Image 1 (cartoon, chains in turn brown, blue):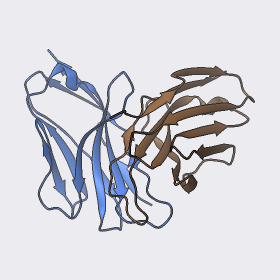
Image 2: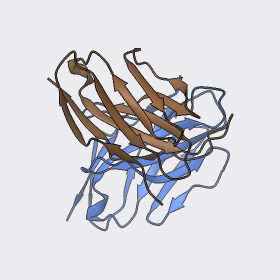
Image 3: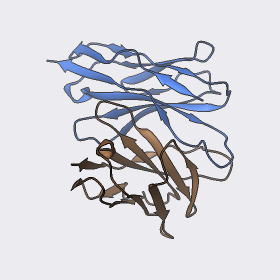
Image 4: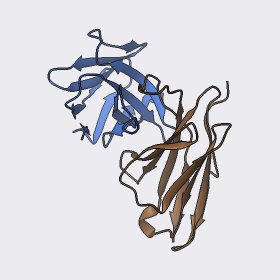
Length: 116
Length: 118
């Protein structure tokens, strides 16, 4: 069974640029959630994708967007990068059914983004 | 909105001893999950233990056990026979059981950094 993978592991961008982060979900999982973890803090929910549609969003602006593909892998896109976007971005996958959140979310190793 | 509070930013324990990490949460819901995740320096968030709110019995996983007090909205983690490999940041997290559309996310506390002393 393959776990959750993320790429790249590290990334350096400059303010105003755009970035795409990628996540492959664990085998058998249909849902991907993205979290932002600033240094020294707990992860904050960005959004979740279920069956290729956004299924909930946290308090993040529209310049944070995403996609989920038919194989349930996912991308997180951030436009017009700001210095405060520097963080660890975590992807988590789970198996969900409509209406209930029974399954545990399993996390990938994260992508460390530095915005200069 | 649900909130999770971890009031101990740092804890230390002697190897082979027992340590308890505290967590409180605030919710008006009755059906939810609570989790403890461990994040070592490698950054990978690893599930330690999970508790369903409808279960009165406290969850255990080998050396890890919880004390779940639903009325008090308290969810502490006990680590017995602490090992050097237990050193990590520990996060308490909450997740609603039923939802329509959104609100299936994990809500995390701010974490407790655990140091294990040899």
